[in-house]
Image (cartoon, rainbow, N blue to C red):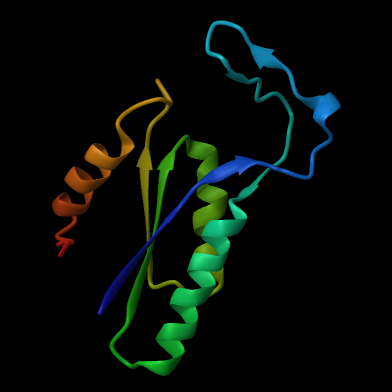
Amino acid sequence: MKIVVCMKHILDPELPPSSFEIEPEKKQAKIGKHAFVLNPYDENALEMALQLKEKKEDVQITALVYGETKAEESLRRALGVLADEAVHIVQETEPFVDFLQDAFSDFQAFGIEFGV
């Protein structure tokens, strides 16, 4: 069984609100020197996949990050906790793309099939 854990590298939610500034043109938080972390919900999903892998022999876990190059930290973390492989789809330009459509296309390029 193949499990793909889609992860997002986000601004640390523990940062105080006073440290955030909004870029008016992009309508998003200025990145600056803020710390980035793995989304806690994605971290939970990775942990659940690892628990399933412990119970079953034929489980292969792929960690997937879609985003800027600094998101590699999240992939290193996933590999550090024994994910089998890591895929980074680098996207440096416009952050507001149709992620779902792009993800399905990219998954198919890696030979990952989806059942509904």
